[in-house]
Image (cartoon, rainbow, N blue to C red):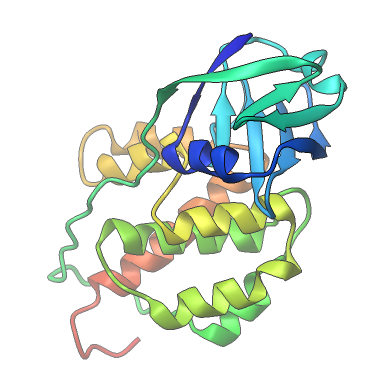
Length: 231
């Protein structure tokens, strides 16, 4: 048995999913991603990105553990016959952000549904950059408590046009569920710790962090614009 931590929605997904074999979507040295009920559930160690749709373990190397088959039994995920037991729930919500509409951002083109259609799935890899930008934009709006129903619906309608992992992360962003580096970035905006948090975010993945930051800044520029101001 290996102890893991999990976000509440991941725990609930596993409990609700049917028992039986689970398809492996991607195997890596530090992360394994699996399809569970049309959602992507990861198993990540401390060297991997702590995505908000993953079980997290302190095991240093998942290469051997993730090499065999995977299956679910009574809500418990097994890798290579080893059960991953959830011992702790972890918070993945973006912190609350207070927007200062008195600031004067540079002019910005607001994100619209046509742009969403162009961004979803745009790029390479497990999480295309266009999706990372959208995740940052969505999560920043959730942090500000700002509803974006048209964009949300456009994202949901296009999820089948990207990877399973990226679609799952978009679903997480719609609910304000984020990487810890993104949460730290939002939580330290306009503080002395902000520069370090930004560097940590930019270090995530090959381009994931920079895509998230681009989306967050895009959202912040929109949110800070005074009501009725031209884009």
